[in-house]
Length: 91
Image (tube, rainbow, N blue to C red; front, side):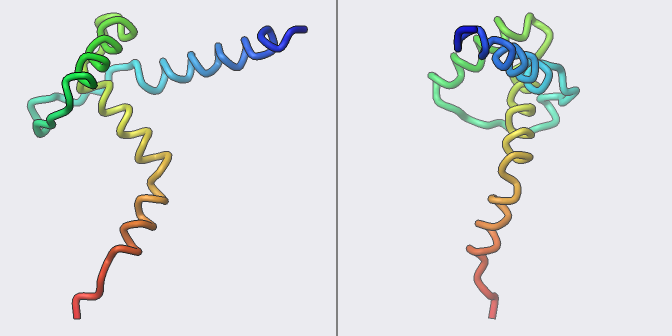
C-alpha cells in the first residue's frame, strides 16, 4: 500500500476531530463578552472558516471560543508554569 493511502485514515480522523472540536455551536453570546481587536487578515480568514466550513451553523464567537478553549487545554500547564516563574514576591 502506498504511503499516501496509509495516511488517508489518519487525515480523515483529524478532519473529523477538527469538526467536532472547532466547528460546532458553543452557546456563547457575543454581547455578554468583551470586544477584541484582531488584524484584518486574521478577521478575513476567520470569517471564511466560519462561513464556509461552519455551514452557517456557527458564529465567529463560537469558533474563537472553541479555538481558545482548546489552546488553554493544550497549554494550560505551560501557561501556569510561566506565570508562576514570573511572579515576584510582594515584600
